[in-house]
Structure formats: structure tokens, C-alpha cells
Image (cartoon, rainbow, N blue to C red):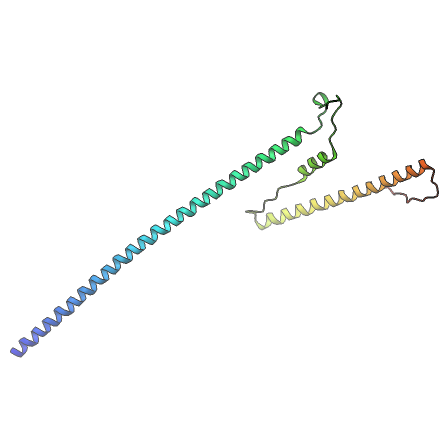
Length: 185
């Protein structure tokens, strides 16, 4: 019986020791869980702060771009207004210079007004493939039209050059010089 009693006591001691170890492991586990929760909360807080900073930067960037766009549009409008005011008015609104006659638009001003009318602002952002293809086709047609106009203007230039030479030679009485005749379309 003493043997059984000692065996029982050793079993009880072993049981209490294993239970004590299990409780220590449970305490360590709960501490690790709490530490992990705290780390996750800190990471989440940091992530939300970074996200807020990123959103603020994006908002600032968007506001800055909108401000630049508005400023650019205002500058463009001012330039357009300046160009429009420099147009030659007709009728009762005809502008006169200091001498009292109508003010003619210089070639440079004419060129600026024509270029300001012809220039198109291209925006490719947020366009689908179909829209891009359509835009490319429009640009191609426009380029063909400009090339045709260029050809016609070059032809007119050659004809006018011929006529000027012809009249110069005619007025000087130079008959020995032959000039190619410009064929009209």
C-alpha cells in the first residue's frame, strides 16, 4: 500500500507539474496573441496613416493640376481675346490707326490667328481603343487635307512666280529668255 501511495503521489506530482507547464504555455500563448494583436493594431494604424497621407498627396496634386489647368485656360483665353481684338473690324466698328485709315493685319498676326484656329488639343487619357482609332483616323484625314492645301499653295506660288518673271521680262523687253509656262489646273 505504501508503494501504491508513493506511486499515487508521484502521479499527482507529475500531473501538477504537467498542469503547471501547460498553464505557463497557455500564459505564454495568450501573451503572444496579445502582442500580435497589438502589432497588428499598430500596423493597421500606420497603414491608415500612410493611406491618409497618400490620399492627401493625391488631392493636393489634383488641386494643383486643376489650378494649373485653370491658369493655362485663362492664359489661353486671354491670348484668344487678344487675337480677337487684333482682328480687323468691318463696318462701324472698323479700327483706325493714328493716320485715320483702317489698320491692316500683318502677315505674322494672320499666321498666328490661323494657327490658333487650326491647333487642336489632343487628349488621349481615358480613351478606349475604338476612340483612339477614331482620333487617329481624324488626324490622318486632317493631315491629308493640310498636305493638299500645301500642294495647292505651292502651285499658286509657282504660278505667281512665273507671272512676276514674265512681266519683269516683258517690261524690260527681254525676249531671248524663255520661261516655262505655268499650266493651270
